[in-house]
Amino acid sequence: MKKVAIIFITAGLFFVIFGGYQLFKTNKAQEKSLAEAEALLTNETSRDTVSSSSMEAAASFAPSTGETVGILHIPELHADLPIVEGTDEDDLEKGVGHYKGTAYPEQQDQIVLSGHRDTVFRRMGELAIGDVLTIKLPYGDFSYEIVDTKVVDADDRTVIASTAPKEVLTVTTCYPFSYIGNAPERYIITALPTENGN
Image (cartoon, rainbow, N blue to C red; front, side, top):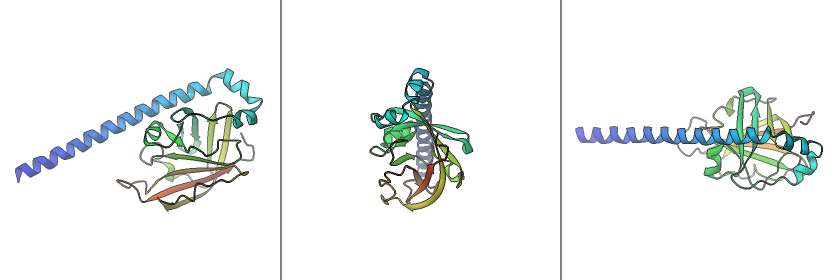
């Protein structure tokens, strides 16, 4: 009986230590990505050059997988989250993933951002209709107002579909937020460009 108890305690300690290490590693990766994004956005030469022709810059904006591209600013949560191209596990460890093949601001189609519910998006459930999300990229800042939230099955791929020529921001994360393991559902936020655009 004593040996069984020791095995369970040891296994428990292993999972706690492993979980702590994973969290530390993820936090470090996100800090690095955020620093890269801030450096990218504070490069005044880059921002000034494209500000006069943002539509042109948007049309040619096609970052490589794993590249840090900008910041998702969420005023309601006082959060600035790095945006990384791609939604593989390695990409999501660095921050909010941009779903490859979907648009970026001013490309007149659906923009899809995804993130883990237990890291970058752990407070997404606090957002409400009317709250604003701002995507900050080298060619400008673009704000979107939340118009809808819903929960769908984890296997539902209908939430990712072209909206051209209408620009729509779709943000996805696993749900329920407090679920342990692979969550069975997805929390979907839909946001539309604000009237003032940038």
